[in-house]
Image 1 (tube, rainbow, N blue to C red):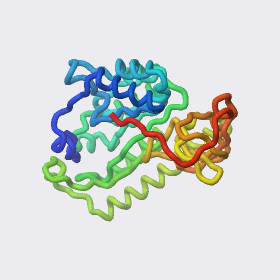
Image 2: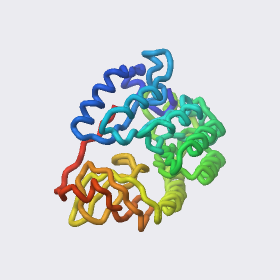
Image 3: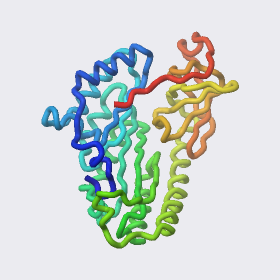
Image 4: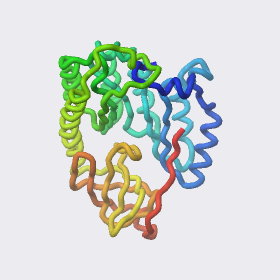
Length: 301
């Protein structure tokens, strides 16, 4: 287990749901109108190892993409130690698999990664990210970063900042370390002062906000598919292929469109965490009636 994480204590050993169970669940949801499936787990990229003695994530995604009605597959929590470059390349080639992966690095100093028991290195993580970006156009890599872990020096933090500046993650969340009872990290010496940890969080979030804004600008004048979730006072709100529910940004679209529809939107304005644009006319979105404010369920498996 990672030295900062108490989830394995609460949930126990990994338990993969059989492929047949997930396909049945996905089929039922698709029949209800669900268009996006989100694959999520403690280490999603290790899916199937306990049941089949080998990774089965690619096979699962291939079969999910064949279900009628499913248009988007989104992967959360691609654990870096169990996510080799070839795996991301294989996933990127699957129909319906979005050019989006949640890849939580936690840190980029090799010394801190070892301290955190992450079992990877900055170079390996760079290789995996590069492979995914080269395998799909308009790739979005989301990450999570932890600052203030015991023993983190200013030099370690600067290494992390340099990594973030070089990789330029499209999406990122930054958190300060909080000791969890029963974890290895809670027993470590050299605690980082809370004020220093908060200052590092603020500095890193300001850096990332600028990166996000720059990455968002690449959409100006471009068209992206948007999953509509609600309508309010003449506008529709939804998520782009770069946005997972609740943790990422959103898209504002002029006009009211049916929640649950996936429509092409030409982006006209951007902010760090929001796109604004105009729907491009298609036979589907011009023939549907306008509707009120309701949302479509999304699968978490």
